Image (cartoon, rainbow, N blue to C red):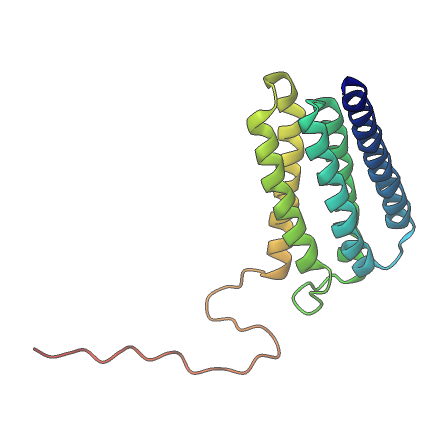
Length: 176
């Protein structure tokens, strides 16, 4: 009976190692594809897959209390996100007209910020500063994408190509 338990434990550990190795291979393959991609919209969409794999890697490292790995993976995610934003801005500078890639990237970065916030809650204090820097950088990217998608306009100025719409009328006042 004890022999069966030892075998089951050994097989479980071997399966866990294989899953972790497969995850690392998956990340390295996705990273290679991301680095080779020249189309900025495809690069942004590929960051979703790569980012999901990287965020999953941080969850696994968190369960193992490997905060050094978490920091390294998050820094790589931040660098990849910055590369995708720069590529989009270079190829499609008008995010209002060409939203493809911008929206997906903004949504994914916002999701990553939530994951980083969860990590900051559980991480020991000595690991907080580098993770906080990554969080601050991701928040700046998120704001940059939102400002690109929804630029502020001065009062009364309509975007080019939009038809003037009548302003909504105020509801009639009720007399007593």
